[in-house]
Image (cartoon, rainbow, N blue to C red; front, side, top):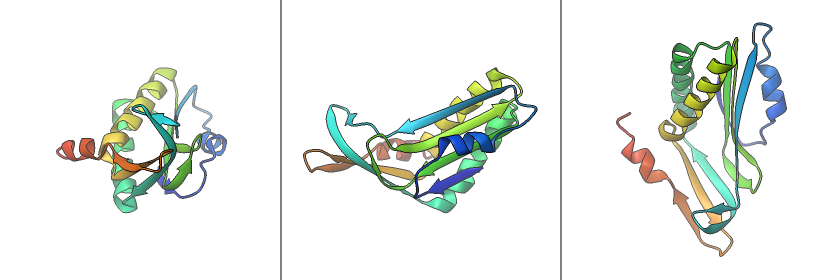
Length: 144
């Protein structure tokens, strides 16, 4: 399941939502807002997304991961709006029968989401400047 939210992400609740008696392994990824990027002091981030496409393409990524690395449950949540340093921006979790599938699926999911989803990040810097980042990478990857 792929979700977009404007509220804080509760990683522990998400982990519990993937509980499955057949699962022997669980892997998650948490993407946090950091205070430095490419030598610039970051004050906060702002995410915008085209939610219908984020959900549909995100689900496509989860389905692909399931075919490549069979797992039992998976979930991804991405925040939009203004986020402060230390906030959780994205969470991916995978429960599987074995750890190898959980690790591989989690890595595949976050890597694919980063390049395929229409989510845009604007960095607000301590010096008062701001800039959209990584937008050119998404445009270059449009043929994926």
